[in-house]
Amino acid sequence: TQLLEQSPQFLSIQEGENLTVYCNSSSVFSSLQWYRQEPGEGPVLLVTVVTGGEVKKLKRLTFQFGDARKDSSLHITAAQPGDTGLYLCAGAGDSNYQLIWGAGTKLIIKP
Amino acid sequence: KAGVTQTPRYLIKTRGQQVTLSCSPISGHRSVSWYQQTPGQGLQFLFEYFSETQRNKGNFPGRFSGRQFSNSRSEMNVSTLELGDSALYLCASSLVLAGGKKTQYFGPGTRLLVL
Image 1 (tube, each protein chain N blue to C red):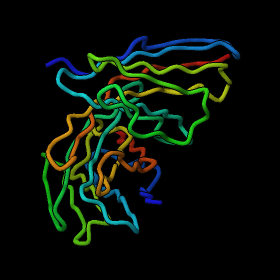
Image 2 (cartoon, rainbow over the protein chains, first blue to last red):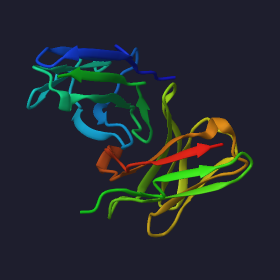
Image 3 (cartoon, helix red, strand yellow):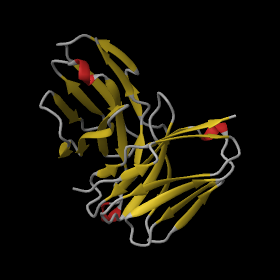
């Protein structure tokens, strides 16, 4: 059974600080997606990484896919209150019919 | 292009009742997946439909069922509601690309409260 573990589960920091959240597995994924979800809404796709070692940047967010395609990280530089939300990672196996979801990291950025 | 829509957004039911939730996918998307989200359990996969056929099913009891229509709209039904069914129910539509790759786009969810 493929599992994705996200850490930390909860993070509360001050505006302007940097942070990194992790998504780890013992399984290999063909691709990995990161989503952000705000209260009362559905998750919104931020990025998809598909190549081992790939790094993608989305403004102050930097996403990295591990060389072995078993793990990923999300780094936020100079966090802002608007970054507050639940960050979810989801991995696609070989069939890609069903995504494997992490439990999420709840991020709070205090002004 | 309109996003994924779900109706109703909020619903209050009592134990023992049944409920039907609706999802309209993004135009052109033929795959619809349903998830249950609770604070302690995260996103739990219920089932996926593709071209009116259930393609995958999660580990939920038979009280949870779904279907997909020829226009790709999907419904899920929960019978004999229990208190533990209170959750946010999310629908996601996907465009399946060559090689089976897909990205899921979520609707806003239906918040179900069972009293």
